[in-house]
Image (cartoon, rainbow, N blue to C red):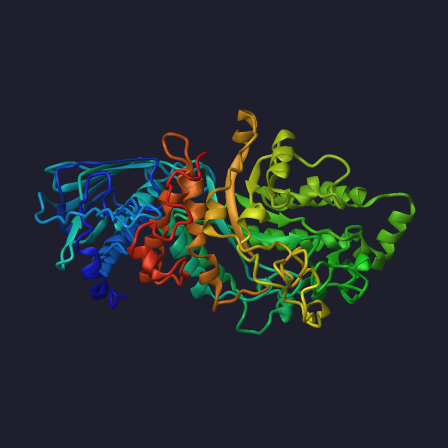
Length: 605
């Protein structure tokens, strides 16, 4: 993993210590408060650990120090102002500022002292993740203090990023530093989808590694969907007949391994079993009578009569009592495997057309009842049923409350956490106005699968040779349009980082925002591309929900993040996470020369 280092030595050897305010290695996410000193660098030798006797802490320290010594990281992109350029159109060239290279260490670091107030705090929603990290001038110790083990883990990942190569085979910390750090939000995450395409345990581990490095703490796992059921259940073993293959399943032991791997890195896993929509594979192996429209043609070739927004169709029959027996048992078994206090039970994208295939529901509608009444029936019967099986905080997609087509007609309990994915700020405002806790996953800003075109076959919309709007330039399906991606365009890291999702909220409403999760739906994702589609864009979200997107003066710091995220992408790749490049390598080596505006305050507030 170090084969790239010699090529970088020449370009980075002059980068160290141009000033205390422009060190080469600022961590991502940027800490809440970080102050660099001026007295000069510390050499870093073999670090010993002085800490409470805790296996999670010891293992994390071992991983961090191994990464430090194995990588001997040389920052690939450093934070620096742009060089001077000719003023148009005069030929005069201002001299570029030269960066001063550090020569001698002023101290030597040999130990890490960790103090943890509560070593027994569990990894649950709201656990304290704050920490301080201090390296004082003249000290030989790195001092870390945290309220819980999980704050200490974050301190270690910060330490990994600020211990760098000195360009001569040794390790240094560039200056004395004092960090006081804590996240803005308790929910900071990504979502993976193993229902559309299978994601292997190794690749899930890889996502968790990226999460730990960027201080993301929630993996929302959309495990199953209408297309496949890879989840092994003791209660209903026949459900995995609808896995893609016998090799593409998750056993109980596999789930426990993934949970343990994540927990050791401070990452909670919130499982999702999507119900009652997106239901076909797996469920139909138990009892086809509790299913609706599973044998219909999903688009009906007449879109107003579609039974699903994508193949293959299917929904659980809300009026069939068998539905509640089965969903209750599935939920209970999974709640016994996943220890997190939160459990996601779906609730999105219910289609009335699908229920035309249910005699029970057709009679219900014929009596004058509405789709909202049907959804309310589900809420009134399913939620108490789930709670009787296992006591969890339930998470649902916002549709159950705010969908224009399928919102419950009555009351949805306020203790259900709602995940907002449509209409950006508008839905966030309305949900928090009504008193719901909200996880932000706005598709206009945070859906990482957007912008890759459509994926359904036999689509005549692509069979167009001439732009029908060539004269007026109006975007259309194939020309400057979405190309079949319903949520186009592609969500760049700047789009994600610039999202002010609490804009316009009162202080009470803001207090209901639990954080944000960036989904990566997997219609066009499997092991070969998951990391490149997830990273490093998820790292932009990580900083947004950890310390925000503004500097001390209230200005957007997106431009400041540029070099930090470019460097972090290289660090991810060196750490085994297959993150995609964001820019040509020229941009890494020439700070801000790839910006659209030379004016570094162009974003303003």
